[in-house]
Amino acid sequence: MNVLGVLKIRVRRGINLAIRDSFCSDPYVVITMGGQKSKTRVIKENCNPVWNEELSLALYDPNLPITLTVYDKDTFTADDKMGNANIDIKPYLDAINMGLEGLPDGVKVDRVQPNRENCLSDESCILWENGKMTQKMLLRLQNVECGEIEIQIELISAHGKRGRLYI
Image 1 (cartoon, rainbow, N blue to C red):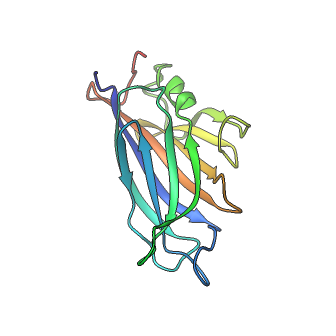
Image 2: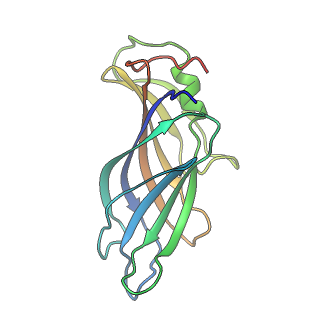
């Protein structure tokens, strides 16, 4: 199977994450796609953690689901789940395939609205900035009472440039 590129996911921060210990939680994020898994460091005693970490996954199949799961690190028992969200990259890939290289910085290529099919909690903009296409997302965590995760995605094409994928 040929790799289409590397999907870089910058996990920026968590907002109002659920409390799983006495007064707070020790959250970390795991992102999975296919058989791949990547995770952030644990932030101790913080329900509004700032990770600002970049995780990378090889993109082989743009139709594979990408899942973000937040856990609370526990010392003596299994880590507790603090919610999950699916990352929908299809609108982002569609924008890349428009072949819009060379736009002025800061151009909003597309806007994605929250709906029943995505986990967005607010409008998400696909931007052309610094010679690359990025998308910032605020994801509402599912299967939990509260919490959001802010991320940014970028695809580095296997062809060595931030261009079309031809998928």
